[in-house]
Amino acid sequence: MKNKISRIVVISGASSGIGKELCRRYRANGDTVIGLSRRVTENGDLSVDVTDFAAVQTAIERIASEYGRIDTVIANAGGGLSGATELLPLEEIQKQFDLNFTGALNLVRCALKFMRKGSNAVFISSACALFALPYRAMYCASKAAVNMAAFGLYMELKKHGIRVSSICPGDIQTEFTANRVKFSDGGERYGDAPKISARKIDGREHKRMKLVPAVKKIYKYCNKSKKPLYIVGFKYKLLNFMRHILPQKFFADVTAKLF
Image (cartoon, rainbow, N blue to C red; front, side, top):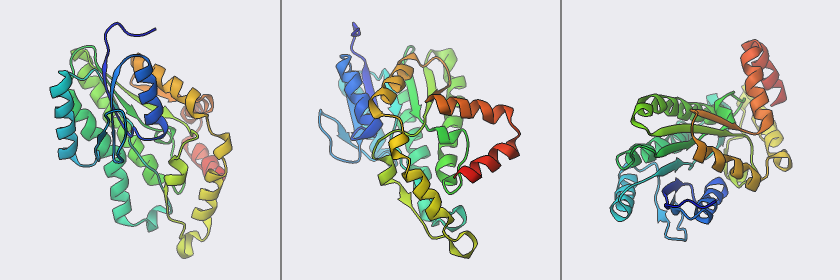
């Protein structure tokens, strides 16, 4: 059913994958959608690097000036990084946090100025925010930081009628895997382990959730947005449940063996 009043929706990472499909769904619902992406996009979307606070602020002010408000903001832009944590270049770790954490926070903080009671802010996080993986520790840490920011904002804004949620999808068939920055050098300590781990993860592409049904669930949670956390994918919900009931050491050791 279409909304009687078109919502003003801002979505980052709109040029591909989850973001592109979310834009399509909101537009199909009759909402006014402004997508943000570093790449030049269509449909009146804006070219914005979310790691650049000034650029984000300018884009959000432009949107608010044209439409008068922002009803929904979805911080979806992100990227992956894999490799032995000890050996990862410091600048790559910084880039990972700049994009996944700071970029998401930049967007939501700027948008909140133009959001009122009844609006909602959504962070697209990851199942990796819930349990770490070897040789993807910095990606997991950046997404865990996203969750903590979302939970804090949930508490700060609840009494003001602004809903905040972090949505943690599991692996989805998108360009994310191919675009992940990979460092396979393991040095003397790790040997081929980072390369083998990356190969295992990349080799499961056919087992990942299909994009359209996965985003259908994400879209539902974006609109529902009543809880601070949603997990997309049954097996990831199960893993999260097991993480809470199993001894931490046992869970970590089993995860290490699997990956």
